[in-house]
Image (cartoon, rainbow, N blue to C red):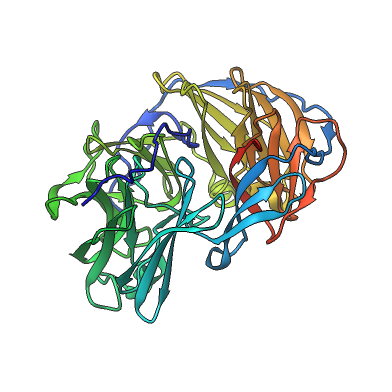
Length: 452
């Protein structure tokens, strides 16, 4: 099966990724036996007095093009290319897996027991390629926001599964409609060749692909206990063989894990896949999968949130990588907490706390670095907290009318912010206002490019 699309150039873009922090231990023990994260050195900065809050200014007439995922309901979300000066969507497509490097959106639509897979040009909305598969399949999703995933790091392979909703309805031991089998499809992204169909007994869901698409990583769901117990397995796409060995923590060798995935992010080449899980007993942790070499690490925070805070802030984590790949940031505006982790020395982390603005918008996941990687912006309540990226000292706050849904660096400086009021605004300019209206309501920003 072809492994790459001939038109793709994989120079790579920096995906937002992070660990959570610090100690590498087994992901969790068996039910009822939570693992305490081991002690680790933590430099905690004192909270700083926030500067005065200033309003978000409107975009300038320069008019960057902003790729966004718009809509609160995953079932009706769209991918749009928006003129930042006007808020007008120049392209509007069904939601799907977005390949920024190739400028493509892969969409799966089911009808009458069949699945149509289509590759759209994001710049024009035109169809690049399409194919039809038997059965009901969908793009895998990860986390509370149900972000579509399933693309290999080299952009050449796409995975589809039965969908988490249908998997959940099937009950223990059943994948689709009580058949006891879970189905996947592995396709070359040119959509020109026959897919590899994978059928496995039991309940499975997508986890990741190796960078070249040769290995499909799957989550095997083992029980229906109070927290789902699972293990990660590797399936060789070329040979059609499920490996016997479980993908375990390289240092601790734990086989079983528990938790609910909150977010997932991947390095530019797809070698590392980081999945943040929520666990009511031990708090959040990150499963860090080395997708090329088939091993993993599990990373716990050094300090657990209280049960009440964990409930309030469980979906508030955002994961950010500096452009020079020198620092990872785990930011939670709802907790008012940021941890900076040097990539080469994760135990030398620095954690600071700041005053959370509170309120219903405090569970936002908005966090982003400025284009020069000097300032980390974290949405917290109705504000955006600005931190020095090296020292994590707070430098100021910017107001976000109605709450910030997402942040991303702007090529010309400053940051774009999408607001929960369904508007697009810019941080870092002097013009007043609260942005331009978007079509479709709240949006998450995928990337921004300067108009040519």
